[in-house]
Amino acid sequence: ATLHQCRGCQRWHQEAGKWMACDLESRELMALCLKNVSGLHKRGSGDKIRVVDAGWVWTEPHSMRLKIKLTVQKEVQTGTILQQSFIVVFVVRNQQCIECQAEFRQGSWKSLVQVRQRVKHKRTFLYLEQLILKHGAHRGCLSIETFTDGMDFYFPDKGKAARFMSFIENSVPIKTKHSKKLIGLDDKSNVANYKYTDLVEICPLCKDDLLYLPKKIARNTGNIARLVLVKAVTNVIHVIDPLNGQTGQISGEVFWREPFRPIITAARSRFVRYVVLGKEPLLLENNSSKRSATRRNRSKLALLTTAKEADLGLNDAQVETASHVGYLMKSGDVCVGYDLTDIQLVEDDAEEARTSGKFPDAIMTRKIYASSGESTASKQRMFKLQRLDVDVTETSAQGKKLKNQQDASDMDNEDFMQELDADREMRNNMNLYKTESLVKKLEEPKSTMSDVEEDDDDDDQQVQLDELLDGLVLDEGPDKEMTTVQELDENLPWGGVGSNFVEEGNKAAKDGISYTGREEARSIKDKDTAVPVNVFGKEFMNKDVKFI
Image (cartoon, rainbow, N blue to C red; front, side, top):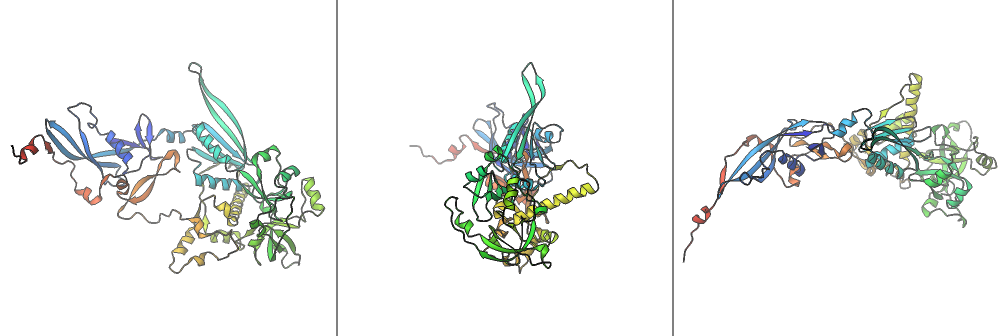
């Protein structure tokens, strides 16, 4: 018998163009194999064969063969039943399924989702990429293309695209625009073929952006101060007052009703590095007209004494400011923030408030955990991230322009990693993996947990080992008693299966199916002699029956 398997998604052909995903040595694959055995499903009363037992027999992993030991019974004459065991060999052939064929065809997509954000960096898409990978939202996507201001996702049907858009809507504030294009029309049957395009625009506000809220929005958001920082962006915009720790939330509907831009974007060119010289705890009086900050946020406030890193050794200028991240700081630490003394704001209201002295001299955004340089910090960082398999477009730039684009991409990646270093809540939404250097360090006999991470009870934002996952390392092959068995993996396209090294017969034992191991399979016979198992009247004649 012959079985067909798709090499792309590892699914098995069932019937009439239907494909099913099942593990090797599983109950589902056993049923599929038995359907392809001729002679077992004859409906004639005289030719009926009953399957007594079926079990897997070990085969070489790369032999493209499956073996099943069948035990069948058949009534050859009235009252006589013969039983026989034999080996059925199935040849596995490669054949592409319809979905995998569409993946390699040009123009095979039916629905396109264009995700855009009108900002100069790509940190939001780096964060969105990690969310997609963790939740498997890209399942069923034919291909992914990346641009300077967004990404394109191609799907084979409209349903998968709608599911992906629902995931994006639950992750970030968006607004959508739908369109469709007629490809073909059959007037007789009234059937039309459309291609759908959905434009998803993400709000231009990003983490650590400095905002000057409109009066109405500030009043409706717990009467918060107009000068706030963007703390996080989920399906709503989380803002925080950096001077007193008061927090608020702005929904996507409120933002898109009256859109506004940040007065200072969280770009590397706008950040100023400060060195912490000292800190003091800060206690604020409650204001009954405002929604007071929580006890947890009030305990994080501190009055920092800082100096610009570029001014050290040149002058004695110091800056004192209250900060919501002050509890993380200690003398000698380096942080980044905004210098509001030598800046010109575009908005008239914000510039008037700055010149009148209503703004502080500086606002601190986050702590820098690796202050020894980017190249050294990237090597010492003990986690890494998984990336999507995307096709980069718009690569017509050459020479210096291409190098500048690559440098900007590397800067965005490093800035995003620094954000992860200083934000525990952000790391909880994605999968972080241990680096090879960290794994080798932990495997050393004298290494302990204290050698890898520093003990700081006050710092709850530092990366801990319990947040990291073990990465996939294939330095060595399988053991002698291990074999490559395909297991279901929902993260693969079309619900396919992936290859992992598991113990032989483990899946068959879970499904209650007998399994013949490697050593026994070498000496097993292809066909046993048929033996009678039941002859009518023979058992009755052998019994010692006394008649009265």
